[in-house]
Length: 578
Image 1 (cartoon, rainbow, N blue to C red):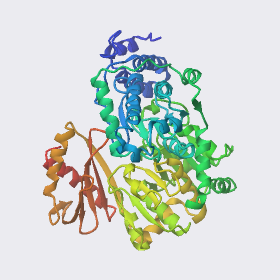
Image 2: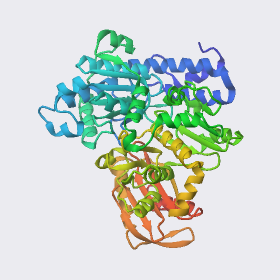
Image 3: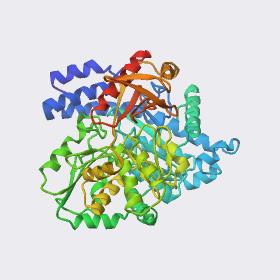
Image 4: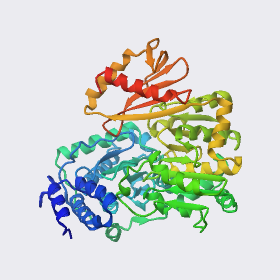
């Protein structure tokens, strides 16, 4: 019960009594979280009361989402309550059901979906899970009810991670998965990811169909039947909704495919536990990985494994829950206090599809770690094959592949774009801290990244920073950076403005810092990437999930990245976006 004068006044600023539509529960929650960080537990009860109001909105809101439903590179994301709620998730699930029902009359999606008929999809069923976001169980019950009512088997994982759910699709031979997560976005967001039978992010023609079906249902003012509020109630009604141990499925897949990728989870964990000179620090940022990390290490009680931010907190302590330099400070401080000589730190985002590393001295982003993983599997595990990375990712992997005489596959941003080389590429990764490997899932997975890092250290007997240094000594050093700016324009208008970047073409001379540089190559498969004659480059593209323009740069010198970032921002000013 909110009783203090301050909290009553605060609630009055954000809430219109009895009117979810005009009330701003998320704004209220964010304000309370900010005050709680400064003033402590006095705000605990007001925060619980605010979340209770948000729960009622998520449960009872039947209005069309405030923002138009659209599946981007990683599914659909929106604000909890106003966009993502029990009704809207049920509506989108109905749109997915319609897609399978229409396979008979429109067979063009059979290939991308990996099933031949509605009946096959119903029997194989759906793997269903969610991350630690607020009201995840309620939203999952809403999804499960729609699917079960329509005759689909539901493999219910509960709270889990994206990579684990993807592994479950493969092991259960499910038709698809639904994961209720907005990945690394802040506390106000909810999300909805759909993966087809290959267990990877859905192809564009699939997400476009889901979007179109959902928009038609919104136009028709379709309101799904009210679902039970708990999965237990759904299970009592439908026997074909059953729970399972998702992490056990993931571990089984990794060990089963050990001959393909060369990684041995059981051996690596045992070797780590037998060493007395090694410490591993993992920050879960209160996400779903907090349920799995200790089990990955056999639930062994050891001071060599330290897990940070492993409590349930849907506010993430008030931080944006993404792998970032700022969020890694706790790991770095913990590692620096340790007397161990071998140190591994990792931060994992809420749905466990992104991971970033440190050894307490060097921060290792995926730009470098993906290239290290490729070098490791090729040289230490003896696996021949190509490497795949998105076009916005560091060119360190390009240099390594060229030295090995191996192929490079470089698609646009989005893990779904690796589909053509799944089963061929030893490693496929993107700069935003996502990675997977041959013989694993076609979905980015923080846990396989963690296993890679552990095996690298155990095999080379080097910390990650030292291993990276040895690779840079052999193949050259690369200094990547990325940034982004929020923009007010979007859609066609944003694309029209970004098209003005065409004036920066091959042969153009651009001022970068105090130097004039000539563009030697322009790559336009995803935004515009301009490569200069010295091998440095910058790239500008619209975000696929947020109202932002992103830019990526890479210098061949430590001091050059800031100049490239400034140049990218100046370009956005010149074309009228900033």
